Length: 162
Image 1 (tube, one colour):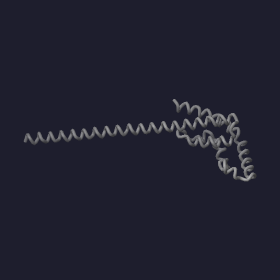
Image 2 (cartoon, one colour; image 1 turned 180 degrees about the vertical axis):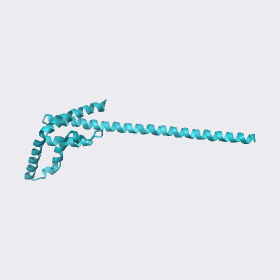
Image 3 (cartoon, helix red, strand yellow; image 1 turned 180 degrees about the horizontal axis):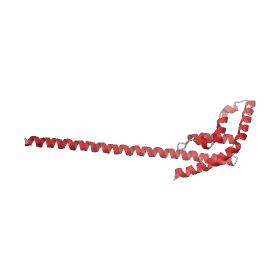
Image 4 (cartoon, helix red, strand yellow; image 1 turned 90 degrees about the vertical axis):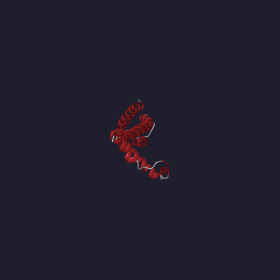
């Protein structure tokens, strides 16, 4: 009878030790998986920051060019709208800079590059007239948005690099 109890205790101890080792192994695997997931997440966040910094650097350059009147208002708004839409860590910028996005929304249907060259002169002039009217309509608000956007981009760059 004593042997049966001794065997039961030994078998029970072996089962408990085996389960404890298995649980320890599973906990170690879970810890490794969590660490790998955190590293992947950090790498993704870093990639987003790097992307946004490049975009913001371009925004600063275009905004400065627009302030110094080295870039057409419509071309600048077009480029800025596309760049602002590509930012990964910022959202709802169309509400912060409504004039830039407003002008872009009204001129994005106009022909550009090769498509514009294919237009007959009358059509080009009509599109130019439409663009100039819209630029005049949005001009004062765009200047304000450009100042705010330049400041916003410089601040975001400093946040991303710190």
